[in-house]
Amino acid sequence: MPLGLLYLGASAEYHGRRACVVDLAGCPDYVERAVRELSLLRPEPTAVGISITASQAKLARELASAIRDHFPGVRLVAGGAHVTHSIKASARQPERTRGLVSDLHRNYDVLVMGDGELALQAAFAADAPRIIDATLPSSEYYVGSRWLDRLPYPARHLIGASGYRYNLGHVCINESNAVNIISQRGCPFACRFCAGRMDASARLMRRPSAAHVLGEIKQLYDTYGYTDFTFYDDELNADRGLGPLLAGLIDLQARLEHQMRFRCFLRADLATHTQIRALAKAGFVVIAIGAESGSERMLTNMGKRVTKDQNTRVIEWARSAGIYTKAIISIGHPGESPETLAETERWLDAVQLEDVNFTIVSALPSSCYYDGAVRRGGVWVYTCPENGDRLYDFGVNWAETVHFINGAPSADYNPSIYTDSLSPSDLASWHRYFEAKYKAHHDAEPAAEPGTGATKPFCAVHAIH
Ligand code: B12
Ligand code: SF4
Image (cartoon, rainbow, N blue to C red; front, side, top):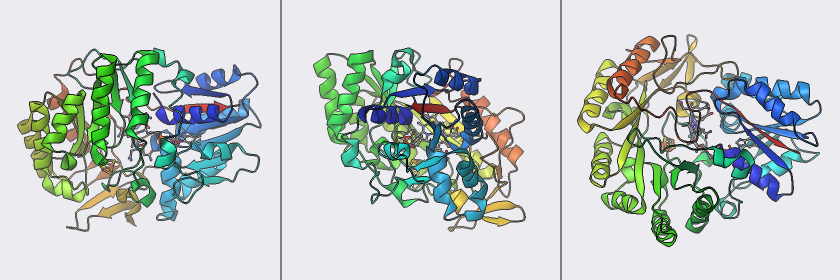
């Protein structure tokens, strides 16, 4: 479920507005569908918010244009990762981001950066500024931990939550009754491929109390009968306050006399054997780790600050605790070569994961690979400070191109990046090779991550009136 929009919907309702959320995930006729849904609203909407990630920017613009045609005078508000990170990146890469930022200014009336629960109300005001920056703790619209504890739970009733049924997103789990939740925001780490990492405010952690999170889980169980939960937190163990949450989950299940199942993302360097056992005891059956590579040089180059041995150790601990591990492997970091990919292959052969996801890196605004690159001979070049290894990027025009890869690349998929020893097509071949070798036996592979139409680009609309 689109948590961001559902939090905004809840906030709008809390402030006495009528809200409508349209989830366009995986919807091929997303423009027609959105216009149709908006046309049914009475009275007509006065404001429409669109949530945008980089790969959706072009689709969102088409949507915005159709909404303007059908509802002249409506206020169009844009928010989400693309808006936040493009504007933030423009301070460091003004030339490179010019097209992205002007595209946003041309097509939307108000741009909201950061969490939108408080900013949304200001975006509706008659005298709303063109940009509302809610990313800084000094902003009156900043959603800090204190606010997260008071925010209403996501308004899942606005999208007919009972119609959503997912599995826990692991190849070993076929039957499930899962929903996604998020228990903290921000990540203090600085992996160089990750969007937002160049921005200090994105590295600030915020979280509600364990009681608030447990209340949401209970509400989801009571209202919709959900028994399985995927935590969308960037890294659940990035926060030191995991103990009360795990104790609360055990207590909740005992009180309800019902066993629940959970999935989360973890950072391997912060995991301990005790923590993994505690997760298993609380009902965690799947963990996903951003292992990224089996090459120490690549792990250094991407600024992961996790070692291959730490990744291996977590997989072993999880296996001994009866938890399935899924690893995310990313291909095409600075200096990637046939040798480093062979190291990754050897590592994957050694750890024998039940499930693994492959992706090819792309340089996203506000990541180190994007903001830290310099233009040379028509391409963007990021150079690792440690050893001079380089990543080359043709530069995706996110405002004009739908560009992302999830799952095996099609024959015509062309990565935007390359290294000194691997061309874009070499990287795509390696990706296909890994998919064939490690995923071919997964006939019953879930088509998408829980809660998403992950294999297709999507947009979402949030209309308020
Ligand atoms: C879970 C997740 C996924 C899931 C589901 C995504 C979903 N939409 O539910 C899956 C696995 C499908 C996925 C896929 C991808 N993802 Co992803 N994903 C995330 C993750 C970890 C959590 C999203 C979430 O639920 N956040 C919680 C909610 C509360 O926050 P939110 O959605 O940002 O919404 C808040 C604000 O942004 C704002 N807001 C949002 N929309 C709007 C609209 C308006 C009008 C307003 C006013 C405010 C507003 O207010 C909201 C409430 O506070 C984020 C990282 C993160 N921590 O956010 C990455 C992230 C969004 N993903 C990212 C990427 C790169 C991808 C992929 C391209 C990866 C790939 N190679 O395939 C694909 C592309 C998907 C697509 N089509 O866009 C990047 C996006 C970067 C960018 N510039 O767009 C992020 C930021 C990770 C990162 N740091 O690099 N992803
Ligand atoms: S990849 Fe994970 S650990 Fe690294 S900066 Fe991004 S969210 Fe944090």
